[in-house]
Figure (cartoon, rainbow, N blue to C red):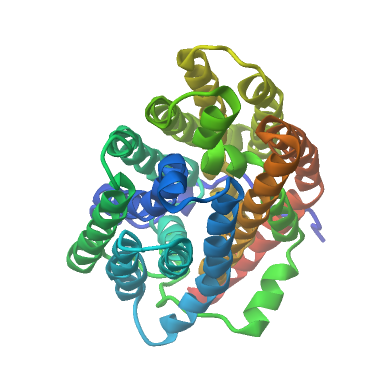
Length: 438
């Protein structure tokens, strides 16, 4: 009897059936992700101005982000329950598009508590988009090209964010500019909702798995969640995303430059453009390298790349957050290198999830992963605010950005013990289903 585990090397026969206009679908999903992220971008980039307008302490940003992320964590998986009655396209149009009315309403807030409530409600809707977008992504592209597809998805979204960054910075020169930012963001989200209804085409769950058959998206119950949590690789991934300090710089980098190094809000916001462009390059380069390494070394290629990017990030985060270079260009360059390294992540972890998760459970798997990221953003944002008040903002960044990311890179070593076994088990299961489908 041959007891050898199935190979993880991608098979030539495992190409997905041709999906019409896949690139157009990918571009639409990228725009959706980008415009949904502008709500958080407004809060982080324009917080120094918003803080002055509403007389808030530094810790208020942590509270704002934390409450919105907790709302998203709770709401994200709940949105998937609606898949029992509506399609992924309809649900996306609602939670990522028309829900933008709440983002627009945040621009009308008269005090912090109104802003907090509206910001949280808006985030609760946006949280439903991530699992659906990533589920559609892995159904459009097979394992050989998922790294590049994920890189293109988040890279294009980063490009749109890069173009929006300087505009947000200029709004800080306008009285109540943060209000216009929220109003414009909400309007763009509603426009995206219309475009999703008109042009998005769902390929069907499992469309990238040849001869496996296609099915409508489903919302697994408790049994499905238990199946997901029984996968060791997914448990490691959730722990790794829960302790990822990279979100600290993403949320509060502009605040660090203003409070830690004395730059004006408008000048500090100029780092958003080069950092976003660097993230864009990182997503494309990371996706291409992820797929290439996976083809050559299917057991370890993506894992080594992930760990190397995390450790390099942790090392370079020290000069970026602790040394006063007295010139914004140097800070922008260092922030851009860190953004490039962070951009490598989507081209690795999205294919990792798909490689160990049954097709019908991938939407739920991405919901778990993204909800965990929201929890991480919430607790690190809260911790940053209170540590900044107690120790100073640079010391807070030292612990939450430098030390925590280095520890996270070491934690990623656990993938080497679980990934090959879990991916091989899934491949065997898919082979069995194909045999039954013939």
